Length: 388
Image 1 (cartoon, rainbow, N blue to C red):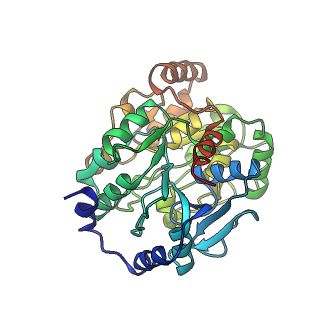
Image 2: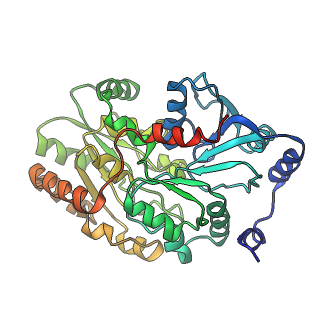
Image 3: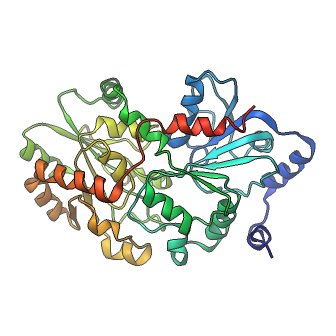
């Protein structure tokens, strides 16, 4: 039994997917159409956004469609939209030559002959075990969907050699899937000279004074939606930063898209700001001075800019048991702690020169990122061979 038959035994086509099968019978592929999906319709962001931006910058006459969760999602005028899981979305997907997404399908989308599926994924190098490496920890239905998704994937974009190795081993790719070692398109913006403009935009949007330093708190999600591992009271943390660096600070709280509905467990104020629904986390990365996270791959996006990253893992033992961490967590150069008191100590004792030296060695000897500011251009170049 081939992998398609073996996997689809576990996945029942829902109404929308059945509609798409019918649409495929009566509609030709449109060779100039490309459909983008960011976390099942969660806006214009992440790797898909920057590929879309490159298409526009090259003035390519492609029909660009984005799946959105509702009509309130803000999109640029040069793309069309379709509501995720709607009949309209089914029609767009059924007739698209190329589909670009950054996560696994939540709905079974039958791939038709001649279509190209590109997986950008939503993280580069990371600490937590993912996909096949954590198969025994993941929901069975998710695993079966992921296996089919991987088999149907024509290409996946890689951030570094360690990512490429991880994809080959654990992402259930078929032997013909191309691993595109371009770096992450979303990180191209980190290599431009527009940091001051983006920072001004973020500060204006979130009402942050230009003389106040910014801490970004961006933990990853927990599979069981637990908030036990999240920091909740930031007053002492902000005070420690202000004492250590002799300036005013605010903290932006940015939850992972898979946990964004949990955002209101924190008491926000003018110094503790909710940034969970800010549309583009890369703009927050550019605008922030320091990152506090746990097991999130945002660590490596932030570290590309050589800025300080502190890892605070309040549920370390539980997370290891429930999800698991790779050896990379132990050898990385980022200061680590497991309690708020330990985090305060890290802040008080932070040594910038020691940190930069360790980070430089880690980049050169272990990480070796592909990011160079040209990932989106390379991705569009690859897509051009299929879009007519």
